[in-house]
Image (tube, helix red, strand yellow):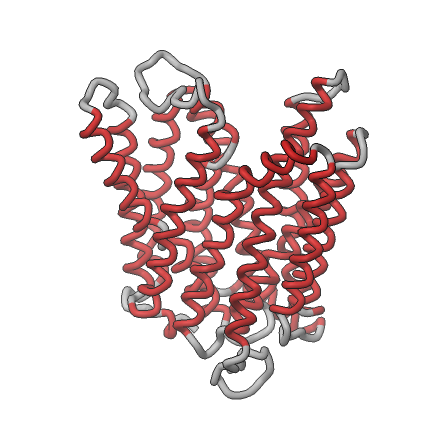
Length: 428
């Protein structure tokens, strides 16, 4: 068993490591906010260039998003393996510094070629950071299953920070600083790199031979193989709802038969606040689950989350066709949806707790988390494509139907995970 310092020895956690863990997760939250703000700045900067007569437009933005995503997808597994070989600390810190350089580079040029280089580096920075961070969290919480469940829950919460605050921060920086906002964000990345370096003290490394063995062991790991199809379904749902298709549908009026289609047509700024409100609700659920997960069986927790997701789909479908119903009834249904969203938020921290325990205290955690990141990106890509198809045919209803089917498939796959009584400490 590993101690929290990442060295071989007793399973008793080092009490000094817990504050470093929270510093690490807080730094990751800052990094997600900076990443979200950077994406907003890219859009605003390209729009500004187009307004000044440069030959750029929406097509360029789509291509830039694709190159960043592709770089992260391709880099996830090899960089996850590298975090085993050179230590997660180096990869996390280096990823943040690479993101700083990429952000600064975008704001000091008008050349589209440089834009592509910048966004590719941004994707590689994300691929370097996420698997390394998750591998370190798995190492650092070995032997303390309550701490592991909470750490994985708060990791999910730190990702929500980017969704909740990234757009707001990016918009405010652009309004006040213009292109200088890129430099400010680059400096923020440097500060985050320092915090990641301090918070990840004690991360371990392995010999090259052990790293390749770890990759083979991760690919053969039953828990990962059984979890992978469910993970793809969940991340496809993420791609459905957090991609540009939803923003288009919410700001584009259709035939009027769907309440949510075109809801923000007259108030596009309201979209940012909608995301902020969603992140607050989802984050509240994650905090609650962080207290519950160490005490409950993981498979029933996953089942409850998936059933809640089915309930959210049905309630959203009803709300989307209640234009003629009394306002109090619609607000009541919105309240029900809010509670169900809090319940469904338990899926990711429960799945991460299961995966972290299944990898075990051995080389290959970085590779396993790299595979996890690859599946996340692949699922989100598939969800984005599916959103475009479903949204074109059925608008908001299309996204809801697709979500319901994907959640139903994930629920049907759940028994493959193993014993229903599997707890966090039994997964390791």
